[in-house]
Length: 97
Image 1 (cartoon, rainbow, N blue to C red):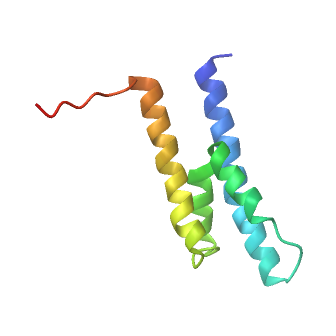
Image 2: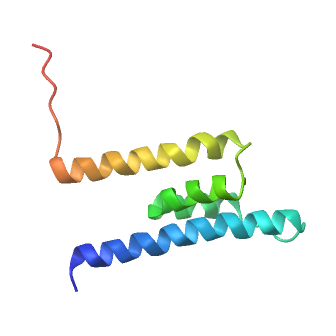
């Protein structure tokens, strides 16, 4: 199997998991049931599910009043994009002269 296909499947699964985790946690919050730990929500984003987690936050209106999520999730996504760009294109030198 092609490495890019495996990576795409992995990213699809982890983003769906991040999206679902936000929805499940919102539902549990409404029912005053056992909650998914915030560290787990962040872990899903860090391992590649940041887009799904952000989409879930705003779809389910969950954690949108928590600054650590409002700023943290996009920060994780930006770092992931920067890492991918670094891997693809290597270090970029900026000359001021």
